[in-house]
Length: 352
Image (cartoon, rainbow, N blue to C red; front, side):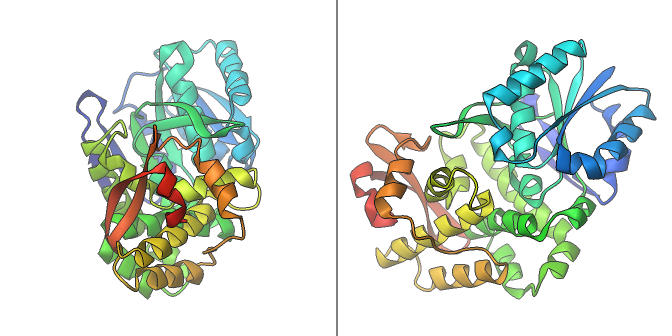
């Protein structure tokens, strides 16, 4: 088992990465807190594979177990869906001494974490991420949120889980599209902080090898996020480095109503667009764009889109990374070395 300690003082917790850990969660809860009732929040796709297994490991340890299943996909990550879950928690008579477990990908983790952070002004929750994207990114660091019609993750908070249990075996049932979706974020991690991981992606031949090396990839990405989150828990400085590819990517997602591309695909496009531009501007080491593009294309990730610049710029205007007339962009000095670049919003077009 690989174990990573996220040191946030009284909000500290462990990430445990182990094949088969899903079936040990009931026992592991006893090390975390004295809970009576446990509510599992999942989506219908993940639930069909793993909800029964998680329920059984909890029932074996005599927990009272309830479950809420939502429709899969980004369209479920909203305040209306959150209210439905709140009403279920009231129906189950959940108290501040009980526990929520989010079993699923980024949507389930973000929505379930947001519900946990706000119901009764906050109850404990644990992340059990089932997609590669959620295992390496969204389940770690305490960002929980829902979307508004005006943009993604516009209503949310910072609320750390009590633990994160990552079972790489769960990736075996992940559709290829969503395995590659997670690789978009994993390659992002390598670009900003881990040249060795990027070189590993250059060497890996196919999806089979990705699954074989999944524990190492997950651990490397979690270590990148650990260091950044510990230095900047509330996303005011260094943590923004994790947004490489996201400023453009979020705008593309929004303009396609979260239907045409997955999140990781949009991040892939965003990384390529900004690196191609920053290389031309002399900010990024020459040849970086082509290397990144080659790795992304190997895993069937898109590297460009036909949206007009003005449309992308309009989408960026509501981005959370804006500060008045300034915007923080994440660019690379070179692969493995990212930085935050604060520019005037009027200069943004140069970077798209």
